[in-house]
Amino acid sequence: MTDISAPGRAIGLDFGTTNSVVALGDGRGGADLLSFAHGGAATDTFRSALCFWTDEEGARTQLRHEAGPWAIDEYLAFPQDSRFIQSFKSVAASPIFEHATVFEKRYRFEELLDLFLGKLIAHAGGAIPAAPERLVIGRPVRFAGARADEALALDRYGRAFARLGAREIAYVYEPLAAAFSFARRLTEEATILVADFGGGTSDFSVVRVNPPSSRVRCVPLGHAGVGIAGDRFDYRIVDHLVLPLLGKGGRYRSFDKQLEIPRGYFADFADWSRLALMRNRRTLEELRRLAKSAVDPTGIERMIRLIELELGLPLYDAVGALKRALSVDEVARFRFSGGGVELDEPVVRAAFEAWIAPDLAEMAGAVDRALVAAGTASGAIDRVFLTGGSSLVPAVRRMFVDRFGEDRVASGGELTSIAHGLALVGQEDDLADWAAA
Figure 1 (cartoon, rainbow, N blue to C red):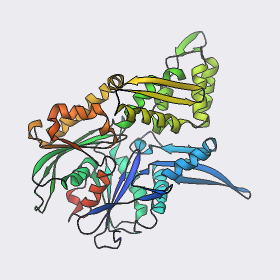
Figure 2 (cartoon, rainbow, N blue to C red; figure 1 turned 180 degrees about the horizontal axis):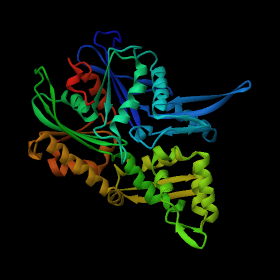
Figure 3 (cartoon, rainbow, N blue to C red; figure 1 turned 180 degrees about the vertical axis):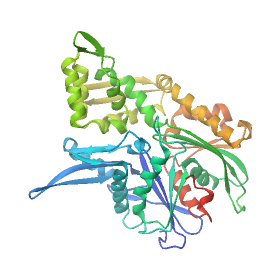
Figure 4 (tube, helix red, strand yellow; figure 1 turned 90 degrees about the vertical axis):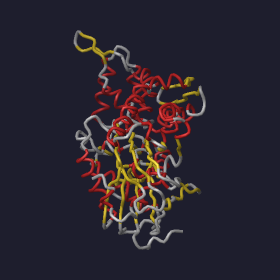
């Protein structure tokens, strides 16, 4: 058990699109992952999710909430009487995201994050000190979103993370933090490329790792990122397998014309961070009007039922199950049932890889930019470290094996290496040497 009162206590917090992880520096240059006790088991990951529901207390209605795996429990117990939100990190840098409406109450991004952090701290059972010496938070090299506003995202982060009461707060690029963790495996100097594939972004850092006896172990050389990752892969699956049954490509009557049903509804539905916000009066009324004027209303009616019945979580669980299965097998089945949508389709890995080919190309372009920023050629990279859940997708790994060689590619700690590295960074002499903003 780590002494949480140890001098120089540092907390590394990886607030992820899908999962969040916390690591605690031990004050001696090491770090321990924080475990959460849930369902009779311990887990290092805390799902980046919120669930809201209402309780009647006398004449008053109270809005309650939970986070992490407890949010999933609440949702599964009462799906139609609750509101489930996950992947909300994806809108952190969005200037057009103003608030999420939950049971008629509006929440800004920083308020959602504040609620989430409050529950994470509570479920940590006192393991997170009330006023840590240092709080080191991971951040992507490039935030998700077509018009991502980095300053806006960091301002929103700052408002929420201030609740932890840390004396010193720093933001560190996530792949740089993973480099600190990976460096513990190395016994000699090396130039490494770290590729971090999260839910919303893919980020790359080139880092010089000095020998273990060096005063400064890791020296960042260059970084690049792209707002494409696991959630985009999910989007491709939904786009090809689900949206054709929900009216995508259909038409509706407008006076004496037939027009295509607006694609924006389908883009929102296929993006988990936006699907969670579609269950509001205005959107549902618009969809019902479209259904009335649609040439074939069946698809739109299915979409309405999926939204009203809060079936986003089981749908995306089915997507995740398919993605994991295709990481192991050449053929897997996509199975989903709900809201009038019945799917049991075989999917060949080659087809999935064709769907995500444009995304892989953009990731490869970001790798090129990281190497250019570092002034380093591909041949000068001694080791490549892949981390993040989507690094398990065979086509992602193959992209690096083909370019750098199997013997130079390593992986591990897919969900925890960033938090571990952040806690290590937190024990460096001057955080300013590593802070990205």
